[in-house]
Image (cartoon, rainbow over all chains, first blue to last red; front, side, top):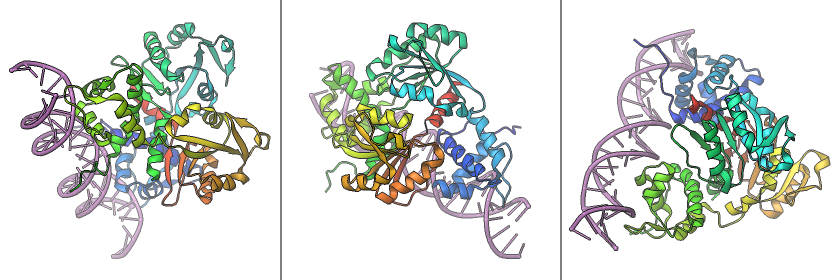
Length: 210
Length: 210
DNA sequence: TAGATTGTTAATCGATTAACAATC
DNA sequence: TAGATTGTTAATCGATTAACAATC
């Protein structure tokens, strides 16, 4: 007998989760005590059966017929599921324009991310801070990563340097890499990566235009 | 009789295209005259049949057995397919940290994007430039969009303002929106949107950690 | 020739959607 | 009750992968 939630949440469901989360926050702020799959589906342009299935995967309490789900409850369930309720520390390498923007972005902590420090090869940046996050020499990376037991590394260097930075991160013990460099990075098994090629993702949008 | 390429490229293929493009550029720079599906697949961690199918969809010349595809040729085909060879103009609203970073990013033109101007409500920014891109009052948006026939709008304002900005963009004639605000935006039919919720996409990475 | 590659057809897998019974 | 909602089971759809024939 097994009353647990489905053990595997489909990847497709997972990718919609942050969208639901964002939408629910808005509904919550509007003061909506309950939300229904049908209204969510309509607002987000999704199929309502799909929404119901997705929600069933994370909600700890079933929806009530004719009423829907309690907004607050659902939001909390989703928050826990997405790991937004526990802070995970990260480091960032490459304190250029994008790097600094990320260091200064205050919203990450709402999504469970806390960038503890930035690293750069540019000496003139060492000792400076952005958004309260200090910039150090890359030589200091290992010490910081190990002392904080950091598992996430963010790469915001130019493309050609991405592989070297990734290798250095892995050598320090980083287990997940968020890569903003427009370059492919090879990693050993056990290290996960999320590539965030902005220009590329834009292409998909532009294609839809024609 | 119809010798044309398959009329529809699956969405899944489309989303892998920029990854191939990026990888091929690297191989090209290394001086690789030919590339094979098998090596691409291995490097990128994909199935080689999948790669072959994907490439078949865009390549104008078939691959040669035992040799593969001519790197340069394939890169050019992909460039044309992804629209990286034709500049599309865009405007940006919200010249804060992220907005300025995007304005200053020189790489977009390699991906067919040219941001012509930024807009902000902050008077102190009017007349200033970032990366050579001027910042104007939002009141000027319509004039700029119409005179340049701009079709793409980039939203880099705080979440709560996203909907208003999107509405204004649509009113000016914008047909595609690249939304960096962590907020859901409702749009009329015919206007496409790509949501770029960075914090959210991060969540998926963090989840893979456990 | 043998082997590495291509492209295609068929089988499998997973995700979406349609149909329906249950609930309040 | 009628209608709006839920959750589930079955059908459909699309994408991936396996098997194979063709080429150089």
